[in-house]
Every structure is written in C-alpha cells, then in structure tokens.
Length: 120
Image (cartoon, rainbow, N blue to C red; front, side, top):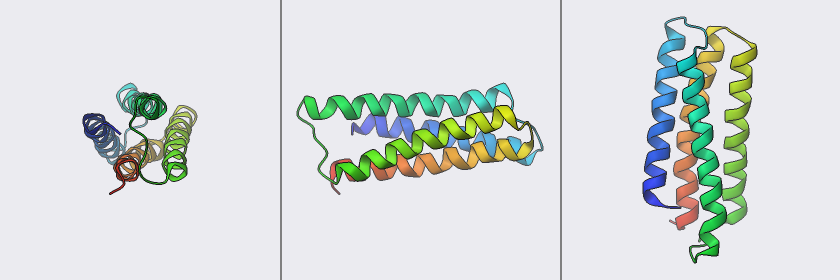
C-alpha cells in the first residue's frame, strides 16, 4: 500500500472514532457529523480497495499474504457499512459509541493491512 494513503486513512479513522465515542459518551444519538465521519471512513476504504486492485498491475504487488490482506479489507468495509446502517436504524447513543469503536478498529486494521502489504 502507499504510505501516505495509509497515514491519511488511519488519521481519518482515528478522528471519526474519537469524535463518535466522545459524542456517544455525552449521550448524543447519531448525528450528521458522526454518521458522515463514519461514511468518510467507508469512502477511504473504497479508495484503498481501488489502490489495492491497481497496485499489482503497476508493479507493486503485496509481499505478504494477499488473501489475509483482502479479508481484512472486506471485513473493514462490511463493518463500516454495517455500523452506519445500525446508526441510521437505532437512534441511541449506543449506536454512536458503536460507530466510534468500529472506526477505531478499522484504524488498527488499516495498519495491519499496510504491514501485510509491505511484508514487514
């Protein structure tokens, strides 16, 4: 994976996660800001998906286990879409905290995907 994309993805996921957790602890239901920040994490993951498809074609294949990388990516996408749908259906503070936890988990998963891709 491209290093600057990894850093930007982690920053986006951490910011969305912390903002959602703080908002949920304050007792706020999912709001536009928290839902859109989680959707921003989903958009970043789609960009990572496109980059992961294009990189091997231009000479930068994954050094580590490609299957493990793809499973991390698909799981992260499913988690972000699932928690966003949950927040739209269940308008409680627990959905807001859930969005935060998922976003923080995705930040860790992005770091792991980078480690797998670079083989270190």
